[in-house]
Length: 156
Image (cartoon, rainbow, N blue to C red; front, side, top):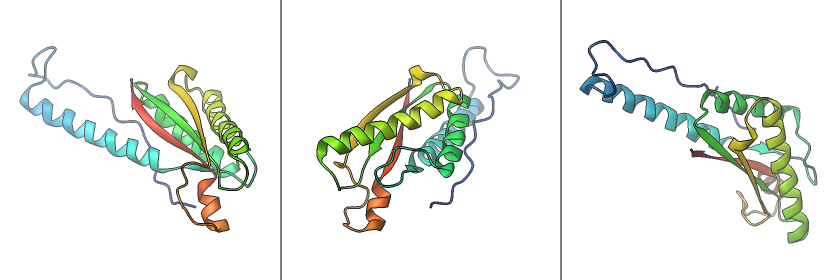
């Protein structure tokens, strides 16, 4: 299990006195660039943290629900962002079965985010079944890494 840093929404931006209305002064561009870089770092952290599932299951574990609560807080603090939730499986089972299982995993994650207050119009899902493994190995350890929901952010 990965160690997770807290994701947080960026601070509200205020316009410093002496700035031109509707535009950015030279000092403001630096602050905006810093905020953009901070948001990009938070998005990268958000995307790198996956939700893992037990074999042949789409049920959210306690750890998954806790991580989804953090992801929901981040999304609610950044309403300009949309998320694509990808459902993935290990290599065991048929292509059709794993596509359906991956879809159930993605939908379970999406439903939990919606229940936590993330607008459903900002959430899409897709299943890749067993076609995009994180670990190409053929061991229980590799399979555990591949049974996941993965999150990809898109700006609206």
